[in-house]
Length: 299
Image (cartoon, rainbow, N blue to C red; front, side, top):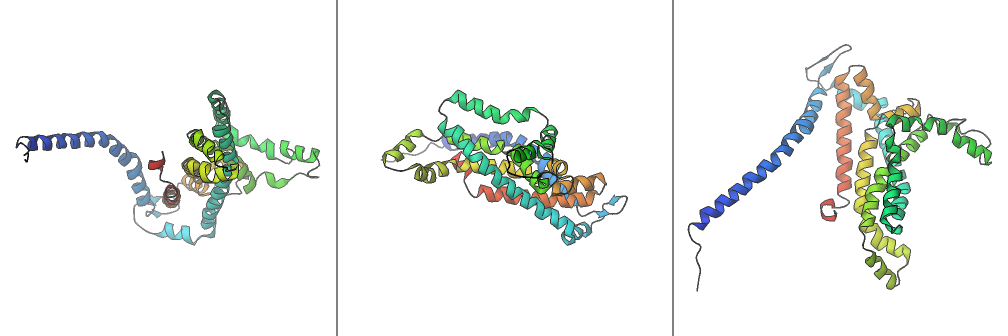
């Protein structure tokens, strides 16, 4: 015996599908409009301005590649690009080295939820003060007569102040690591808190030691948190300029510092070139990190 669909049901189903499609479009439209106005159009405008003709005192909308050629043929600007990449990789590694054990302790070994919250709040306390104050606070810590050098000399570890602690690339890395480490701790601790303790107990019952449990259970399950933290840290470090200027004595030039200098000199075309390069670099880094873990599936 066969059943047939009533003819009236077909138009009704089509009408329902059309209404759902319209509803979906109305829900998506605000986000699409917002992203178009405040992300896509500014980026397209920046690319367009990067091809303008830049003279000493003005910039004209006459298309040329002179600014691009200047950037990629200058040792100064290419050096700033490699410095930015080097500092980003160093700070990213340092935040993972410092942040992962901290998140492991807070998210896995601290069972009391209240205590977990207190410890995470303690990590966020520095953000209660101004960003510039947190950056400049490192100067009296890292100076030749600063707290760190005094402690090292008092304990006999060094006999003279270490001048490389301040106004160097090392001081920039130290400052950025302290400032952005919390953005690595938070996502990893969140993922650690989602790990089912029964899985770890089952691994222990099967005779696995902590090292094997860490490699086969904890690390794979916490990788989404590492990737999210790496994205946060990468985007902020690659766009940095204030920390590098304050702690290096303007000896370390990152792409962000080049943009600030060019904008201050009203050289909009060249600043746009550096902005496009920095945007492409950020996009490549984020895309590469997203290929490590499928965040949609894991989160």
